[in-house]
Amino acid sequence: MTDRSLWSRAVAVFHGPRLDPDQVFLHRAYHPGNVLWRRGNLTGVVDWQAASIEPRSADVWHCRATLLRAFTLETADRFVRCWESIAGETFHPWAETLAGRPRRRRGARPGRAGPSPGPG
Image (cartoon, rainbow, N blue to C red; front, side):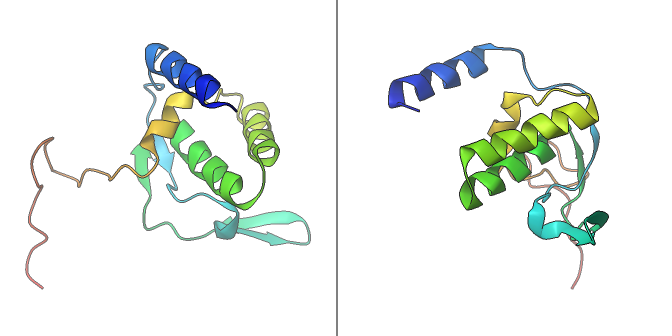
């Protein structure tokens, strides 16, 4: 992708519709290293300490970003197409803006540090 086409895509996403309003339970660190397989069958997903309630496309983006770093754009895009086909949902490009965004602690208000973790 050229610099010009990358910027054009970024502007189009920015001016397009916002991330889906639905909030679902997410793993938030979903990637191949956290998926367990046995004899070609999915047997589990591990490492749930970052789980949260967010738009469903956020987990898809996390896995897509991991695949981009480890493999190719084709592999990452194939994952998204497979997810869309199985989930019956559409990956929303606004999810890419969530990458690396710190989550707000429960009970915290925007612009504030949040509740004290307590003693210890």
